[in-house]
Image (cartoon, rainbow, N blue to C red; front, side):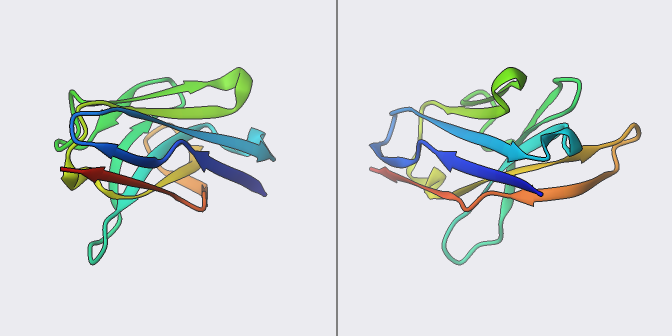
Length: 121
C-alpha cells in the first residue's frame, strides 16, 4: 500500500498563489508517476496536471501557464505550484500516484484525502 498526504490548501484572493504538496509513504517503489486532480461542488473530478516517470508533464488547458507540477524523488513528494489563481480554481484538490508503463498504461493507483482550495474574488 501507498499512503498519500496532501497539504498546502487554503483560502486566498484571486491573483494569489498556493503550493500544494503530496508526500508518499509505504510501498513507494510500486509507483513512478503522479497527478493532481480537482473536484468542484457539483462537478466531476478532473485532471489538473500530471508528471510521468520520465519527468514529462501535462496540464489541463484551464491551468496551463499558471500551474506547475514538479517532483522531488528523494523526498517522495510531488508539488503543484498554483499562480494567478481564479475563483473557478476553487475545488478539493487530490493527489494521485500510480505505476506508469511504457506505452502509457497505468495501474496501482492511489489517492490522497484531498485538500481544499478556495479562491475569493
